[in-house]
Image 1 (cartoon, rainbow, N blue to C red):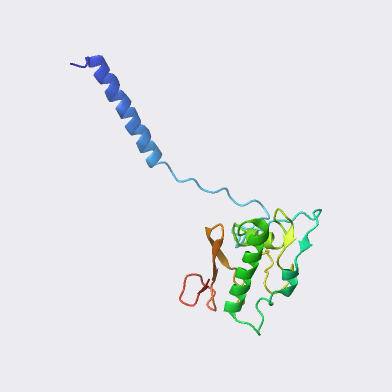
Image 2: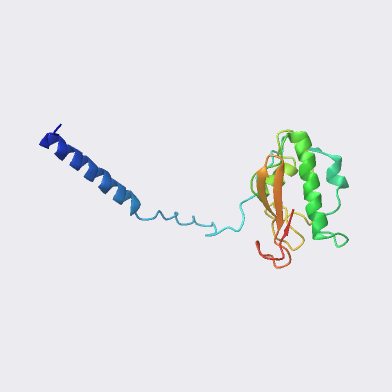
Length: 171
């Protein structure tokens, strides 16, 4: 069967159009972020901590007072990681899974910003930085990597304060 000339031309034109459109999309200029607004820093090191609704009553669980103090000279960095694992375990018992999100979101959940409004962590202390992140004994925010609903890798940057170097501590 022979394809009529008009149909062949239509197919060629359509194919050429698809090719041109593909090339335009492939080689379009990269989008640039908008310039910072007046009074706003051009680069932020950490997002602001999620706010906990102050009108909701938070129930502070006994574990918030009973956990070993974070970043204490009487404990080790490994003890601090074990304490975080303990907090996650308690959180799972009440909430059905680990807290999720970035460091500040996980910290807010441990401070009572969770569906049951239960606090597992003291609201003040050397374990929190000014932006509401859980920090290691060297002042570096912990990195949390969600492996499953019941398993999260907890990483401290260690004494060199740089992630993914040989002195990192991971649990």
